[in-house]
View 1 (cartoon, one colour):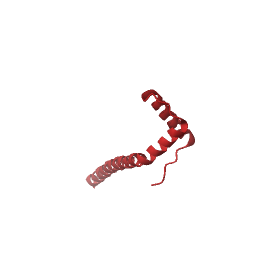
View 2 (tube, rainbow, N blue to C red):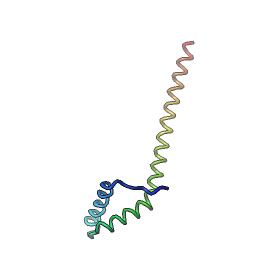
View 3 (cartoon, rainbow, N blue to C red):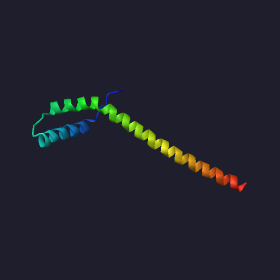
Length: 84
């Protein structure tokens, strides 16, 4: 799987969120570089699982919509058959 490259501002926002979490929840300061390294590690380890879950969820949603479309087409076909 291709490595996810976050836009610069998005990565900076996440790094800042990591730093805030460490300060508020763990009562420990973490610098920018360690926070970036942690983000890169977590993205590599956890990211693919979340990505694949997102794909499965999208697949399920798409199948549901396709079933709705098939039902709608079937109803149209039934209406057409009645008029003959």
